[in-house]
Length: 71
Image (cartoon, rainbow, N blue to C red):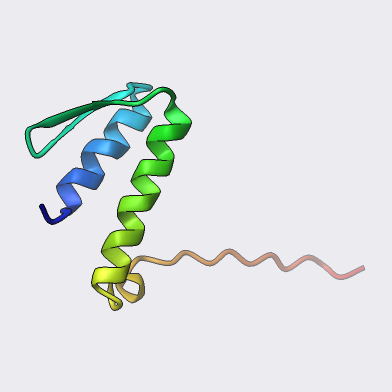
């Protein structure tokens, strides 16, 4: 089963809602902790990146810069 952005969005919603149960493709998985869920989500993101090398370039990048007075 290919991984879609909807699957990642479901996992992000579960992380944000402090849930440990996610249903993807009709299969429900209950994770032991939120940290396990985050690791699983990161693994899926890695699989997407390996399948589509240009996906990383299309991600929005935000750069922050600080310029103080210098004295």
